[in-house]
Image (cartoon, rainbow over all chains, first blue to last red; front, side):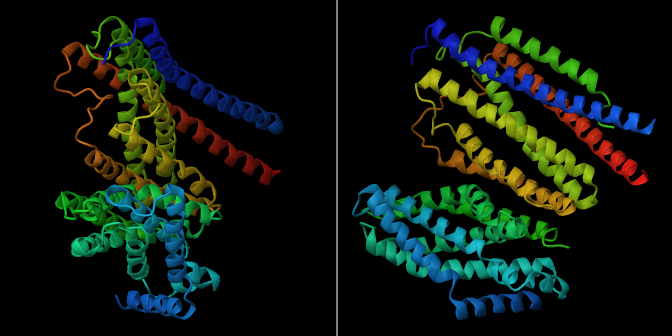
Amino acid sequence: MPALPLDEAGKYVAAAYVVFVALILIYVAIIGAKIARIERQITELVEDDE
Amino acid sequence: MGGARAILRKDLLIELRTRESVPAMVLFSVTVYVLFHFGLDRDSLDGALASGVLWVTLLLAAVIGVSRLFAAEREQGGIDGLLLAPVDRTSLFVAKAAALFLFLSAVELVAVPAFALLLLGPGLGGALPELLVILVLANVGVAAVGALVAALAAETRARELIVPLLLLPLLVPLLIACAQATEPLMRQDAGPEDLGRWLGLLSLYDVVFVLLSVAVFDFLLED
Amino acid sequence: MYSKGLVPLAAASVVTITTAFALVFFYAPLDADQGFVQKIFYIHVPMAIVALCGFVAGGWFAIRHLRSGERSWDMRSYVAIHLSIILGLAVLVTGAIWAKASWGHWWLWDEPVLVSFLVVFLLYCVYYPLRFSIEDPDRQARYSSVFAITAGAFVPLNFIAVRLAEKYTHPRVLSQTGGSMPGEMRLTFLVALLGVALLFVTLWKLELTAKHASMQLKRLRNRARVAA
């Protein structure tokens, strides 16, 4: 089975690697948002306490 | 095991009296055969197609049986009663799995000949003993997994959705083994082929899931 | 307690993955049959292996949970399964991309790894509705653990069954037999595998830290509300 020409194959390979990297970034972003929310709630608690 | 026998007897008596699960499963199977006739636009099937249609139908019918496995207990608030009684969870599992096994066998007693009548091109005669072995081993596996899934889904709100979604993927290895084993039995020149390999897979599946379900059942239906 | 070693772990993951990417594109030789497209192999297969280990680990944590009754094990199990499902989705997507690039179709039934993954993925997707349809938190954890153990035992069985059903005549398109892999490819693959594994553990710890903090916060707020 002949290999695809480099420019055509490149699209697919790039797509696969983009999926991988995008996954990581999206995941980290979600966790980051969660942590930001937790920090906000902590400052609220601290303010209530004072 | 006395407790298991008592629960099993109760379930069988209820089914004999109310005749809810088994007739429904039989009716469902025959209906699905009709659907396949129209869907595939075929009068008779053989080989892999026949094997596939038969087993997919039987497994879908099994979903109905599994959904209803704890129905009697739920409808009469009986689950709590069962738990208070001096019956350990393993006995409960054995009883429910045995009930499911017997229901499935009863259904197949009608559904398999019905399939031969309606859709199967070559007859069943030549390969009947092998088919029986496959059916028995399959019923053991479906009974064990089915009882486990029924208990898992017993307490959730979305029971009717969870049972098919959980049961069917879990049954894929069993389906593979049964369909592959049955396929050569349904050809024009019927005869078992590679049967040992598929029966081996089926037996492995049965052993794993019976042991697993027994081990894990203790943690379900507790309160 | 979960964030111990998180920063060095994250750093190690980033370094390993970057190294892996560099190896993939500048070191590993071009495959004779599939050409450039074969490079997808270096993320598709490591993700598949790590996801499978993640599912089995989820089952193991679930066993620990049922035996000890401590909910921290259930949390570890949940996060491992959660991450593996996401990885599993990525495996299916990259597998489809690879299939399309090398065979012209978006899906291949001949590929036992891909097909097994589809079944496993479908099964584990039920984890969420099962878990979140049980309200009592104690029961929720227990039933989730039972599911995790059942599904964990199912994964190897499923692979065996799908492999056995593979038609002997079709060549494995998306696989790379270990024996005939040249040394450079094998090294690249191992580095990629290590990178994905480190990444998984890092993200696992990260999510556990966030969840744990969130739970402690909830407890504190309840106590503050009661005291007020």
